[in-house]
Length: 465
Image 1 (cartoon, rainbow, N blue to C red):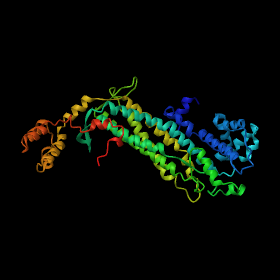
Image 2: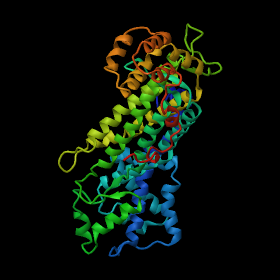
Image 3: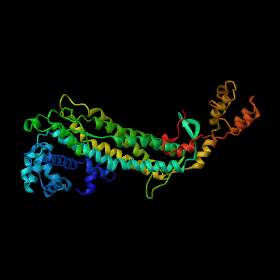
Image 4: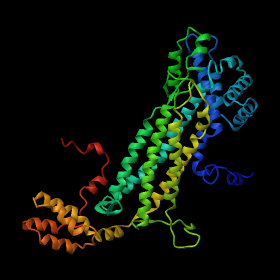
């Protein structure tokens, strides 16, 4: 089939319709990428053994030989992936397939003296958990975090540019105390920034301790080696956090934490997408139409918020998978069951839906422009939002039951600014207080909204205690 037909025939839209959007993740979550990462772990472990005290049966390679060994995964090709795939079909074991391919390649490179050190005393999970951890960490750092960073940049731009764009707030869907569009954008900026920081800070763990987590084969073959120290040092050499106590499988607790952190960031973005969708619906935001794009098959005028809708849907898909990963992966019967294996193969799907959503949300944010005239007109149509300010000032001056008085005047009624001012004129309060109340205006009743819109660091506002 042609490339176009392959995509049209793909079972998953991530490999079909959205392939270009998520192609950056293929180098981390494809089967070929997993083969390459397993080869990396096997080779680095082999080289680590050559430097380990007490492992005399593995000779030390010279610089040229080390480069040749590392070249097996650093210059990994499609032909290499196909060769491992052929071994996998033959032996029906994808980790053993990598081992057999490595042994074959070592012979071909004249490095056969190291063949028996490949996969020495390891169980498949020793290789798999490290290979997956490397792929997930690198995909997060190289693809996911930069995509989230672009969203943060755009939210920061909106917060700064629209810091004083006064807007009617809505709580429970009803008119409420005014805010500014920039302040609301900054809310999402700070929420997302905290979530991204948590996601970036998670240190993935790894283990290398044998079939039941006891180092039994290691000790049987080389009892004089400090295997606890060697295991810890090797895992750290991969920039992972070592786990010494486990069953046959790495417990996946740090991976579950990463899934939870990614899901939390996605939930914040889903909230943002729904709010921006509503702002577009209310006419607060205008969307720049794309040339040649059709908004509706029958209504030519439509410019639909499809980017936010697409992002919302894909964030939901990613969230469902990530929630399942976080619940399922840390649970394994006794010392090992294989139910995590097929689940782990779908990690790339959750990352793919996340990345697709980030790109669509970013596209949506780039298209929107705040319509300040619409914001102001809507706000001025709801002067009843000043009732909060009036009753609060009346509390300050000791007026009896001001909340109840304002409730009777405003609740469930269409109120004009003149109605409110006539109410103020009838109050038994000093004239300066009346003047203060009459000066209230919805367009200026925004408190510290502008300052909050421009706030960079929540921890730098001072200590009130």
